[in-house]
Length: 106
Image (cartoon, rainbow, N blue to C red):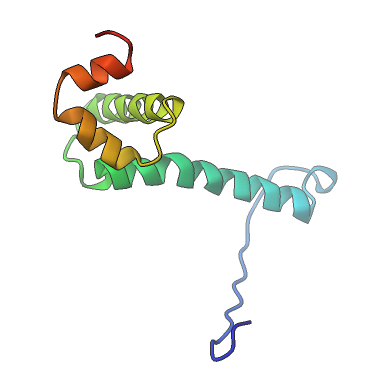
C-alpha cells in the first residue's frame, strides 16, 4: 500500500471445464496471465501502432486479412529487433525501398 492512497480489492470469478486437480488457483492464474500477455504483446500493439480499433474495414474477410497483415508486419519488425514498432512503421512507410531493404529484397 502506498501512503495516502486507498487500496482496492477486486474479486474476479471464472468458469472452467478443467477438473480441480488440473485447475489449481496457481494454474488458473498462470493461464490468465498468459492470456493477457498475448493480449498486451499483440493486440495492444496492433491498436496503438495501427489504430486498429478505429478501422473501417468491416465486410467479408477483409478485417481478418488486415489483422493478418498487421501481425506479419509486427512479427517482421520484432525479428529485426525494432524497439518502437509505431515509429518503425512510419519510417518504413516514407520510402518504398526501406521495407524492401528490411526484407532483403533491395
